[in-house]
Length: 317
Image (cartoon, rainbow, N blue to C red; front, side, top):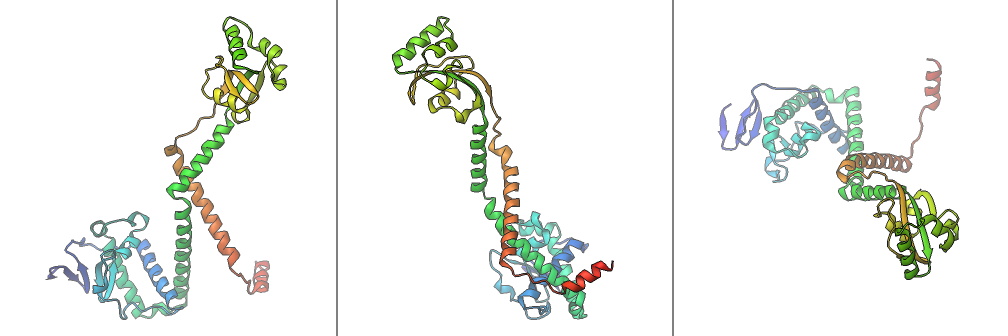
């Protein structure tokens, strides 16, 4: 490879910008060829169905921007950083020029562009099946871009966190406890009852005789095994931290003063955010894609053409 310019080298009409070496052996990947079809498809759509000639006038190399520099030129046609990243696929989205050159993606793009230009020179771009493939590829690329945008917005860090917080709130509501309480009118009475319980008096018997809560009094103050969220506020607050079997200090709440006892817990494990985030993000992405597809379908006017002919063809199979 003969050096022609401090920043330019060429081989077979292909000018490589920068002085990063390319591998001597060439590669023509099937996926890379598809990338060329996609590129042609976008040009096809941009010109209203007329394929944009690859050999025609191209943007000057000086038009490259710092954000999207030209890495290689095939004749007068530049291949920019964004083109090489597209060639590399998802893993190349943020790849540096050095990495793209080292892995051969720039070389792939250049070689495939030369093939596409040769095909165009032979008139293959006008073949019906090629034009149909270009149109199909264009539709696929645009559809994927539309869905990608919807997914990025729906699965942002903020929305994943919000969904996780909602899950945690729901799981909190699913925690169940076996709780009992005694409700009396004053703090002094509650303290006296607690002292009697500490001396050996039965919590249940005291509740049956002295609790003001008629709904639980007959059951010795027991609420049964219930969701934590269903307990009265003062009882619920105590139930979250009170050891099983222990009796709380007097707690002021709705209707008076409570003594609370927790007999059992059936806690639901709350996984950490780092554990749940990937699954939540995947769910949000799937939901976003479904919504985007449905929205696009509802906005479109789909007209069935040649329905009778299709039905007759199916009937004849």
